[in-house]
Image 1 (cartoon, one colour):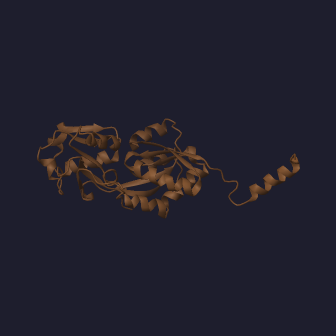
Image 2: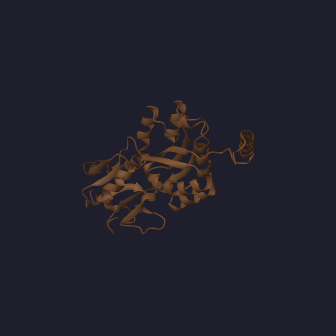
Image 3: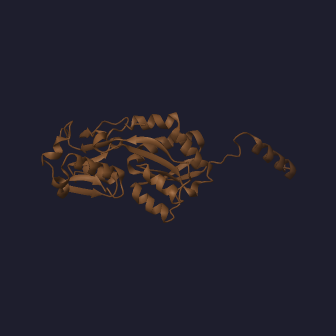
Length: 253
C-alpha cells in the first residue's frame, strides 16, 4: 500500500519531536598524547556505548600536535600531556576559551623490560650498568622534559647524556625499551601498569618532587566548536566512568 506523502511528513516530524531523536551519532577527531592512548581507547568503548559517537584517534607528542594544529590539522579535541599547550592554543586562537580542564595528573617511571634491573630508588641511573636510556624528545614531549629534569636533579645529566636515545614520543620511548633497543627508559606509569595485564620488567615510580607536577589538560579545538559529539566527549571525560579508567591506569587527579 503506497504511503501518503503528507502522512510520511507528519510521521517524520513526530519522530523528530521525540527526546533525543534529533541527536545524530558522529565521529570526533582526537589528538591524544601518547601516554594516554591506551586509557583513551578503553574510555572510547564506554563513550560510544553511552552516546553512539565514535572517536578517531591520533596519538603522538603534544608539541608535535601543537605544530600540526597551528598548521591547520582538523582535530576537534586535543588531549594533551601538559596544561601549557592547551592554554597556548587558546591564546593563539586555535582552541575555545574556557574549554580546557585537567583530566589527569601524570606519573613518570623509570622502566626496564628486564625483571630486577630497576631498583626502587632509581639508583641504577648512576651505576653505568646500561648502554642506552630512552627518553621522549624534551622539546616536544612533556614526559621527556620530566625525564631530563630527573637526571638534572640527580646530578647525572652530563654523565648520562651520551647514553640517551631520543624518541619522538613517549610511545616510541616505550617501544625502544620493550624491544630491547634500550635497557632503560623514562615512560608513563600508565604504559607499564595496564589494568588486567601483568606488569613486565621492573620500574621505579619517580617522586614528583624530582620533576614537578605533570598536569594533563584537554581542550576543545576550533574545528570542534560546533560539534555536539566533541562537547559530549569532553563532558564524558570529566564523568565517573572515564575517571575510574584514568585512576585504574595509575594517574592522579
